[in-house]
Length: 317
Image (cartoon, rainbow, N blue to C red; front, side, top):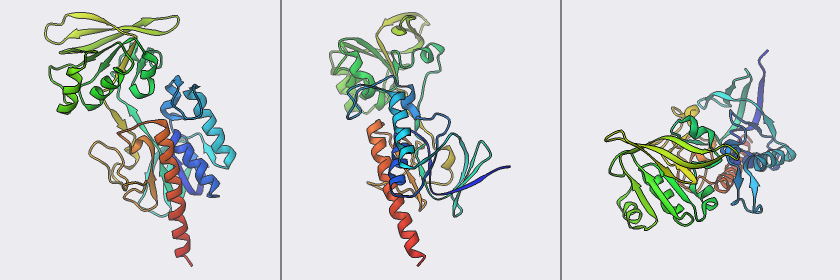
């Protein structure tokens, strides 16, 4: 028989934002329930080495997320392995239906569903993810000191990633399917003026090449869009920078969103357009997209929810 569970705070998503929100709301004695979603631990579970988490000079992404989950449990948060399929923010308490058949109701909701990098969809790309293929230069660029890397994309993200990688790599090749970039002019000027950068215009990536033991990228095979000719660009790292897709499907018709689908929150906070609903992490952040900033926003969301609930409770007297 389908079960209905109620909590003061329901947290949807289990990356750094979700788990940190769980730690803080549990410490506030709000007895939160966190529903992990399809990818427990979020994007860090597909990241191998993390060197920019304060307090750890080196930690594996999946290990870090296991520690965060354990911390949330130790503080008293209930962690549920399930997936929210629908969420109704028009009623009080809020109602969420899970894939298992369980219904969750809550006085406040913290959305920490994250965002997913857009990928090319190549089997070889999937094979080398975390082993030379990345969607985050600021996360992984450090590992390519003195090496050659390739970036694909044509917008601000791609150009910013390419410029960031010049701090480490000996050479950065930016691949774009056209002969002009969409990025802001000032970024393009910096890119074209940089001595480490080379452009591969009118090109698409057909395959990521690499070694089997150990897994590692050695190059990318590209096709020229004009004449169909192919060539191999040698590299040690391949960065996909064609954008991110925020996981806002649950709330797309219920909350105010930016035009690109990211959640809209008040300046300097995590309150959304619906009172009692808060958003944190990559769902709202298209600029930084770091584990540490997501965790910070998770803390903010829990504190915002606690204060909002306190106001609601006091209004009842």
